[in-house]
Image (cartoon, rainbow, N blue to C red; front, side, top):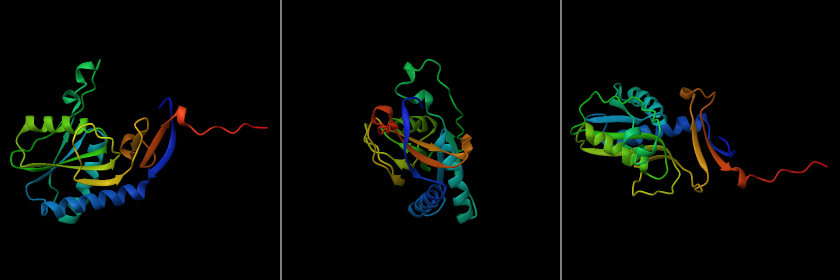
Length: 192
């Protein structure tokens, strides 16, 4: 990331694992188990986290709920401005009608991604409800969208970036990093 420096690691592997276990448990508690439940991961980071959570839920319930993957590229409000959008896979084989759908994403920021995801879901059916689980809530919303389940709230400035780095994406370790801009970088000490 040109123009950014690593400012702070806010979660490591253990913290991410614990957060996913807690989020999975909260989802099961609120929904009374997996009956009529569908877990949908938003491509790409949310899809990886959803896969992990599905394994946690399956271990707890001895059966996995229905699941799916959702790519929101063509539903983004800036899609017409994209030169060559990279459209990922959407896999919603199950009928959404009447289901309690839990969207999973890695970071919520402005709320625009979630708005696009809800638009995409509605094109596939009419869920009974849509809930949202995120690993990181960084605040600074532009749309009135708030998650039902949050791994960690990390207040940030608009010029900062939050990256969720996962093994599934080729990283050696799972981590959540806040990056600052170069203009806000700590001053380098001059050598004598």
